[in-house]
Amino acid sequence: MPIDIFDQNFQDSSETKQQTVDVVQLSLQTQKQNINHQYEFENLGISFELSQVLEAHSITKPTLIQQLSIKQINLHSSLIVSPTASGKTLCFVLPSLQHLTQNPQPFHSIFLAPTRELAQQIFDQVSCYSRTFGLQPCLITGGQSISLQTGQLRDGPYIIVATPGRLASIIRSIQSDISTYFENNQFLVLDEADFFFTDDTQFNDDLTTIIQHLPKTKKVVLATASNNFLLNQFAELHQYQKIISPSFRIPQNILQHFKIVPQDFQASSYLAFFLSILTGIDVANKNDGKPQNKNVLNTKIRQGIVFAESGEQAEIYNRLLNQLNFKSVALHGKMKQDDRFLSIQQFRLGQALILVATDLASRGLDIPKVDFIFQMNIPKSDTYLHRIGRVGRSGQNGTSMIFMKANEFLFKDNIEADHNITIPELINFNNWCWNGKIDNFNEDWLIREVFPKVSKAELTAKMDIQMENIGERINRKKSFYK
Image 1 (cartoon, rainbow, N blue to C red):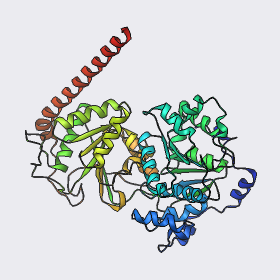
Image 2 (cartoon, rainbow, N blue to C red):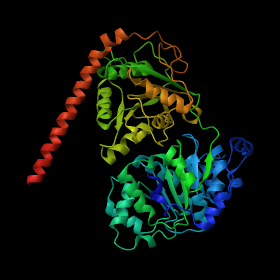
Image 3 (cartoon, helix red, strand yellow):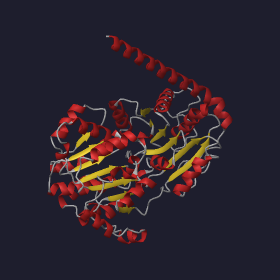
Image 4 (cartoon, rainbow, N blue to C red):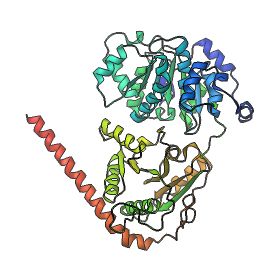
């Protein structure tokens, strides 16, 4: 996002701007001194009634980033940088609800998320805490009836949780002065804020459309797990308060490795073989899908995510894994919205062992039972941070594996330098997975025994997809000539 895109609409009022100038940046040492493990939410200005609602959901103590930010967000526009699973969502939800319970006004808060899945997750979380006070939020995302959502917006909801594209479309379609709708707006939140600061022209246009109709006196919260250059520069330009968690690093409870895949067409065989080791489902021989591999690393493995580079690749991997008796579901942008939500629900409920996804699943989704991730391409540095944040949540152990080409070491080096980590190559399986051990990796055996079966499943998956695409094109032509 160009830095000057919000020069008029993202600035604080002169009074608020002077206040933000006087805010002292929280240094690492200051943050550590301010941490109080006996803190209650009421110490942060949260009412007893709202604290009781949190306790009913087993949330009794504020996390580190919540201690640092909840009071400050009410005073100043802020940039919050904190790792995944650190409780960032409550950092902006609680101040909003606290303010609303005291002064309920329509269009009080707008929470924007880059994906429909993340918007749905935020909406569900807000609904849990707000329904006690009669402050039901409104969800506005693509894939649903735009006329129904326009009606919901006209009704004047207290909290709007939305993706920028759909909310901007509704704003453009309403003929009356939409600015009068939002005159009471107090909070604008960009969750996964680094995602908004890109060169995506359509994304920028949508966000600008929304912001142009909001009052300049609003508080802005930028929440992110990765602080990129543009985001940081923007926060400094507008003198936002920076609240950065001192524990901002990849947790040590996540084992990270990479494996060189000699040829692209062998990637699916490597994936199937490693999944076989983790789950016990033997891909080299026919079975009924029950664990039969005697060399299972960890029988307590629950679920995992496979990240693919594109929607097409995700669909192929998902289909071939199901043919090999792995229970998997897909998640990518080419799917219908109902199918996307169904995949997430099946994975959350444990009905699927594996979620095969694009980076739609890398941002913000909180699925606590994920034990491992496989990355079928080496991502950019900030994307790696978000992907690896899906595993090892709430202090649980986790495993991450990157399948990469021999000429991609520069990308790996960038990740290591940016996050001050070392990602070793997997030479043998000793301690590859927590509490696990197996004999050395036999690449010749994989090519001889695993590759034929996996490549056949992959070919079948590709042919099925091609036939479905042909069928869709034929149906479109038929409907055109009706």
